[in-house]
Amino acid sequence: ATLSDVAGAYAGLDRYDARAKLWADMEEAGLAQKVEDHMQRVPRCERSGEVIEPLVSSQWFVKAGPLAEPALAKVRSGEVQIIPERFEKVYFNWLDNIQDWCISRQLWWGHRIPVWYADAGDGKAVPVCARDEAEARAKAE
Image (cartoon, rainbow, N blue to C red; front, side, top):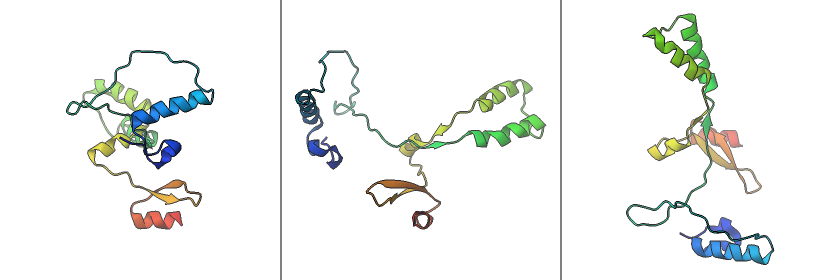
């Protein structure tokens, strides 16, 4: 695997060569403090044996609190009944302490997040949420 143009001076280098060059550059600039061996589990592909590199990506979350509020209200008002009743405590504990839901991992299953990226004019991409591309283009203008 080689580094992309975003890597600047290290673009096009193999990942191992880039690491060695980066470390040498850090030493030359006086930024390196020490070299220290340590044990680490490095994940490898079952088929090829290649090292699996982490891929940093944008994370998208859904605010789950506003989704939980109406569900809690329906059960508390008696409009919806949980049977057997002993599971109400579990239900309330779960929804009263609901966490935002990271939907980024759903991408691996083929679900699409309705986000398009528009050029902000300074070379940076700005996310635009919309139902379709036409709506996203209209919002971006």
